[in-house]
Image (cartoon, rainbow, N blue to C red; front, side, top):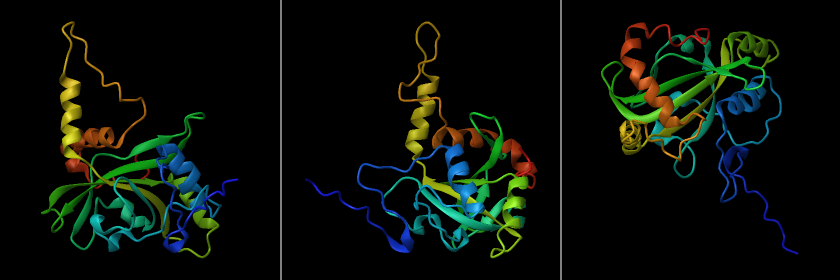
Length: 228
């Protein structure tokens, strides 16, 4: 009888998934099953998301193996939600577009707030945009306050967020746009069979880029998790 190979662990007790497995939760799963449980000090489904202070790392220096998406818990000062810029060593994360609600599929209840940030190299407001993107998720203000009331060992002025960070492929974005513009002879838009109804990282970023210029003048308002 073949012996099952145990799951190996990396530093800080974070699970390394076996070959062929990929951690790719939906927005709702990431907020409800991981962020909410983390905020309320409940056990997590799996120890696959490490804690980190993102301000101490440039995106290319973040811990993790391989390419693709990386996930982190970050304890953020509540005042940071009202800032559109987060500085790091070589640049800063800048909010793109407005926060979006994360709604539970079954109950249609607001369970979280999602923001998109793009990393810029250089000094704040003078840097150049890169292909590094962060999706930051926080709990609605009412849940965040409740979680703080039971976490005596964490500063009351800070809240947990969970972040998905990845380096987008610009060639893929351009190809997606070309496919959407391609039309059949009968005028119908050609749909890529690989596309699904669920949101993707590329789709989210494209939507934010289209609205970024219009939202530039109101950047102070887009950081608040109450704006949904």
